Image 1 (cartoon, rainbow, N blue to C red):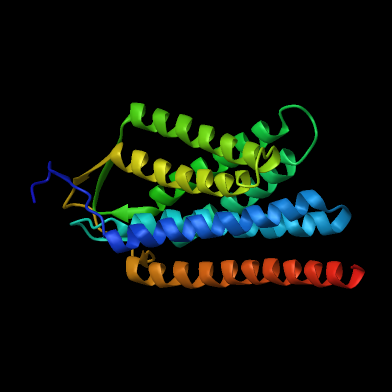
Image 2: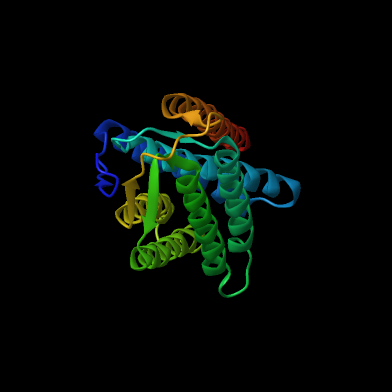
Length: 248
């Protein structure tokens, strides 16, 4: 490959489907937890908020890195471990702050909470892409990054708005779909706005995590997080049903 030739991204469709499924299921569970947080008070509320933030943040983080792994570049690549971990922390904190703001009662609380979540996920996604090292030079298209910024914030605001101001019982499902769509739109617009030029003089640092190893770690971690979150939701739902039956 010539030193001035840009390599083209191709996708593993199975991993693309997996990223979408993880994102949709994780955000759906997170929205269930967020709904419980809004219906409770005191320390219980913050417990549900924490569960919602960890589940949603982990799902968005995992789907981001699975989407990156779905890329099939012709160049060697690896992931910086510290930046990969920092991206997860940012995703969880952004969801926690955004959900906590969004559930409050001033006029634009859901919209402001959505902006906080969207800004955090944008930062997480950018750090995730920066953590991905290839033997080449990366170039960003400013217009594409701007479009990504607008779409990401807009869909995040829509998601938190529908979760806090549901018109029908389907709105919370729509909120999860909006968050899943946000992560997909952000990933593909950022990818389309990025070009990498092969540079044979560059080498990958030895401390990078190989793509295959990161893939197994991400899938394993998100299965544990979402599995525990879904189990908590099912147990709580069953407990409330049994309590209502006893009262009846």
